[in-house]
Image 1 (cartoon, one colour):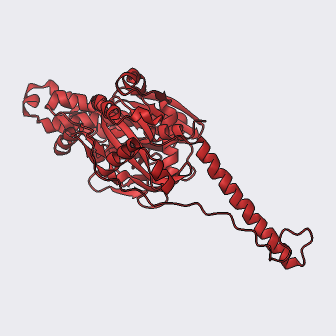
Image 2: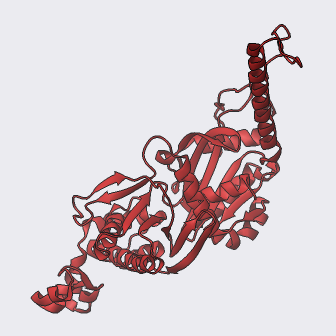
Length: 431
């Protein structure tokens, strides 16, 4: 990924001039008088006083925001084992005064990030996830979502150094394991100090925040209707009313499962090391692919039953007495012990079987956690689900089938960005 600086002109947002407090109209009967001339005058005086109080409160609130909010630019980072997720708030209410005071470094960063949708060969800005006209910490702007492989993080740090990011005296809030692993690199390569935030705190905070501010456009939360029919199940919007309790399953390189009982009451129930990193790593070994997208494309064209040993392969036609469908996987990759099977299987079949193996394992662990915690709603997030409709349908089916319809699998549009959003909120609201 190459974060190259461009010298295009800046297109600033519209100016915004705060409305002024109303003037005092001394010709109004009874205005600010100790004894109003009549009842109407008293009412008018009281209404005007209330308006002054309201406007004064708004001014105090705005002034308070101005004193406590950090300087631009506003970033939140989630540095994972496979991907770096970055959210950037682009202010659109820049005043004429702010525009005149804005330093060139800040203007360059803002223009570079918002005028590109790709950065080199691996950096991507997910334009379809952009949130417009968002009110955040007293400012109005757009929230952008950017991702790139963790192994390209040194290039990002070099870009920050080239653009003199450290001269802006801003705090870079980060979460994820990489916030600890690369802390010294940020200091030496980019002259930046990271403010490290708890990964689970950021995840929960980001999920609840994004769900609360989405009021128009596509629903943030959705599920799959008729999950038992993998070919015809349809995606449907879902409203997260009465949010709690819920089971939050974060599928990244590995998997963490959280039981969330309220905004400030949650715990990590368990997890598994078999996650998205496992899927990609095994696919690279078995098929020779090199990217997540390539592995998913192979999986979409393969057939896992050529690789796995199914229940019917073991029990023949008598499998129904065990209460299991005949096509249920009894042994993942079980058929690969036979030479003739290995010689006939394709790379696409191997990729599909790997995806099914990882997804089934996550679904099984999730179901047991939901039963133990007595929770009926399960929310799956994480970048393993990005462009991964197949796994989402498998998870939806697994939750529905094994719980006899009691568990509903829910998914969120912003998938793997919630930790980064939580880090941004940690920058704006340190308490």
